[in-house]
Image 1 (cartoon, rainbow, N blue to C red):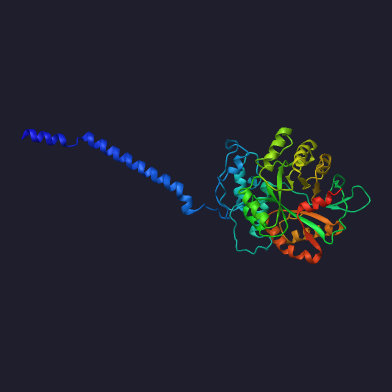
Image 2: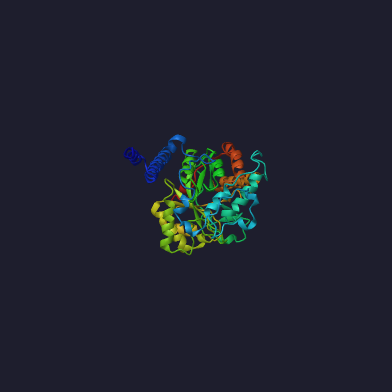
Length: 404
């Protein structure tokens, strides 16, 4: 009896055996759970699809991937995207400084809009106020002068309105295109791609506009592709140093850079664009006055057979002089459309562009992706045919201006 009891007792699992068996079962269960998690992670894009943001662009890249191409993450601390309406941002935050981060700029520009139900053409609306505030984040104050290349016998005959230093502006007068039945106007929309909502508005205008995209906007290639599909010509809008201490861009060009650094940074910018014909300056009141720095830019433009459109943010720009030295095709803007974001004002500026085109055969107007610019263009574009005017891409006017 005692021997049988002892045998049964030996067959019973000891406490240590139970503990070991429980550990093995738990390890197997953990491994199975980890395997299930891995399979779900691998298959979830096929099940749920790629998530999209509120503007319909796929979130298939990190939010700051575009930034990391230019600067190191630790160089500038990233601020959280603002959630309050931009109209609530204090005056001290209305200018991006060197300590701030481009991610904050993107967030501010694309902050939620209040009262979306308001009429899109209503002046002084919340959208207009938002645009005025956001514009101060990344743009220097632009001049109001209108450049009118009159036809006279003088080698350089330029009339300027609302410009004190008239003699400082020296824009080459080129032959008037008498052969054109219709007078030509190029409307270039600068600063495209950063304010995604406003960029989408401009893209919806399916006309031969010229969209000049900043180098650091989110989903850049996708926005450019959509603009091309709408009939827009694409340009690179190159951030250059202004006199005012603004945060030009994560990849902005400054006069303090060496020739090698300028060339390298500019080449990196151009690599983000394909099939473009030219570039123009974003800000750049200080940079475009510097012959050495502009020379570095012109060398690269010549090598890539690209033209330079001078936004003329300063009366003392040497863009034309340096472009001629290096054999780069050059043009200048005549009118800024929307220094004042009011529809009637913008329509008035478009009328100024019409007058210049009727007098000289062509005109270049520069606007920005603002609410009232969109509204004014939407109203103005259908009127061109009856006025004997033709909207063309910027490259067409450049070729006209640079005929030998």
